[in-house]
Length: 395
Image (cartoon, rainbow, N blue to C red; front, side, top):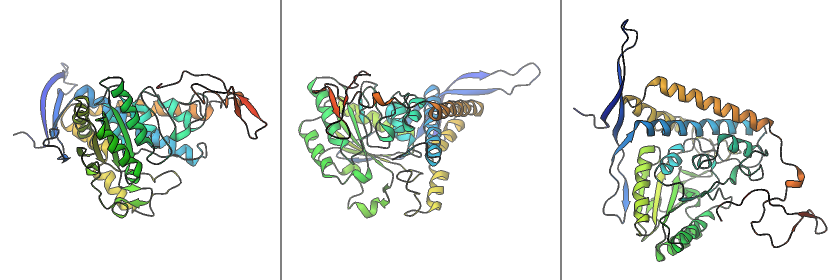
């Protein structure tokens, strides 16, 4: 009888026993099907299937990417404690399934814009671990030459982190407007947290997106706390996927990478079909505080955090699934863990040793089309020439 949580679809390779019997025969599945939690729907007659299939290759990639983000964020946290990273630093640990699952369901020429918890998103959009960590320490090989820091990293079709709470959402609607104006079949993902969900500008963006039928998916990454305030204390309606009123919405378990992927596939097909925007809520959790200056234990207990780690962790639960389904072997995952560790360790050493930019580069690449050749310095009587060093992104 098939398990109610997983079903092996096919097997494609097998380790062969030697004549001496030194290797135990073991089959490896080419793909497997799992059951997700039910999706909650708003103004939708049907939603994604709760029976989701993943191939062996995708399973290995999802595991590697989530592990890479987790270890990268651990390194960032350690460097912050060593005072090598200054200013704001918001870690994505615990929320890895959101970025990895969504990225797996969209195209590279689709647009993504988010708030300030964006190290993981920068990585899945194509940036190297080295460029993320060296940006955090302000080095010249950083994603933005060390001038953006934790909240301002960019890639092609990734419009980066934005430091003003909720301000990225109407910008995302604007990107979607441009996509429709240019008659492309691309979509925009505009991400925000539950703490930003009560911002008035979000509802204005919802309204315009619905009126103009924009290909925009508004995504609330609900980690339960807006800074130090729980969602129950901050919002009269905590069903964030219903907040778009006349816009269809969907709730998904944000700790399950396969569920997130399926929900995003469903939402992206909706938008590409010209049906207008959608609101998505991914129910997730952050292990660290709101930022590194927040210990994260004054408004929740250590026991709560530990319980989530033990019962809902997106990486360990996915690891258990794919091992039980014989999609991968324990040795393969150990090799990935080792590869991830070596990659992040190399990037960390680089983040500590690379030089910063020279002072004459301080005013490069501020404007794509500068009206004046000079930028005001500390006083009106000081000016620094504006220079073009890099090709502007996403024009």
